[in-house]
Every structure is written in structure tokens, then in C-alpha cells.
Image 1 (cartoon, rainbow, N blue to C red):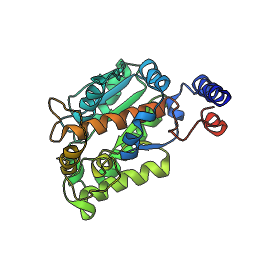
Image 2: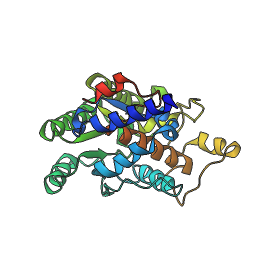
Image 3: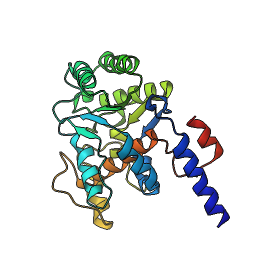
Image 4: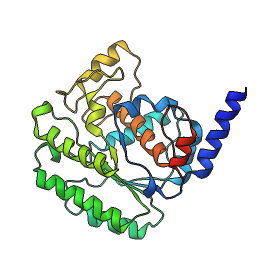
Length: 264
């Protein structure tokens, strides 16, 4: 009983002291392990996401997988983030995406999270073009310091570890690790099943999903763009994990005094 009371007290302290400035959130990469850890996220953090986050998310078909996943989880009783604006109009292949973002932020000042997804552009883009993307994100972060900008990798294309896609995704991952950014690792989620078996040569179809769901119970959906419903489901789990991190969650390893200090 004493241990349970201490755990509750720590959780209360975390929620009380967690900073309201999302720009101060530590860097974090949301990948397949984040999806695996979804069930461990305490409900107070999910509620905090719904209460505090005002999210602008723009994407085309591949990026809709995240929204499909959120809706699948909503069907299981995990209410949607109420502050999500699903723009669904274009993607990072549109060279005007930074201007679109600035216009939206100027017209919607309550927005505190911005996400954009790729279609297939990273499958062929040059390193210089990837660096242009990273520089544009950095410029937005400078101009809007109260907003958390979520970086993203591209979907698998079957080219494996020797392909252009992997090189470009690794360039984005390295930048995010070195500079403490928040990354939604789209490709990593597609590359591992829940048992952590790796499928680096897979495609956006998520071939392993079909095999996995033949021997495990998997939720269904009306349509998961270009892919298997379980891939969308995993994307939704990982997105919840990322959003929970933005409001103070620090994983399922337990709440400690060190965790609390990170938020001050």
C-alpha cells in the first residue's frame, strides 16, 4: 500500500511540474518500441494530451495511416486527441510546406504541435534536398519556439539497407539524435513486428503484418492506405506514445526523482 501511494505521489508531482512549453521537451524518437509500449501509458497522460495539445498535421495518403491508427484505437475506447487538426491536403513533397505552416500558425496561434509526413519523396531525394528539409524545420523552430515540430522519416519501399530511402532516413535520424529533436520514425515502425523481429527489406505493404495477423489477434479497419490495417494500428500506438512524451511521460520504466527533474 505504501509503495502504491508513493507511485501515485510521483505521478501527481510529474503532472504538476511538467512544463507547459513543449519546446523544452527532450528529444525523442518514436518508433516500433514506442508502439510496443503504448499499453503502459498511464491514462492521466492520455488525458493531458487531449487537454493540452493543439496539433496541426498535414499529409497525403501514406500519412493518413497515423490518423487511421488513432481511429482504430478510438474504436477500442481510447478517445481521440481533441486538439488534432487533420489537414490532409498535401505533404513534404510540396515545396511550399514551410509557408503553409507559417500561415496556419499565424492564423491559429493556439497550435503547439506541428507534424508533416512524406509520401515517397525520400525514396529518391538527394542528401542536399534532405538537408533543405532539415534546415526548413530548424528555421520554423527558431521562429516559433513555443511549438513542437515533429520530424518524420519516409515509408519503406523494399530497397533495404543499401537503398536511397535508408540513407535519407538515417540522415534524418542522425540529425534528430544529435540535436535533440522529436522524430516520428515511420520506417522503423514498418521494419519491426511486436516481437522485435526485423524486416529491413520490406515495403510499405507491411508484408510481415499479414503473417503476424495469421497467428495473432489483430484489429481491423475499413482501409489502411497502401498497407495492412495492423501497420496503421501500430502507427496510431506510436503517435500516442510520442504525444504523451510531449506532455511529460517518460516511458514505462517507472517514475523517479530524476524523471521529475527533467520537467522543471
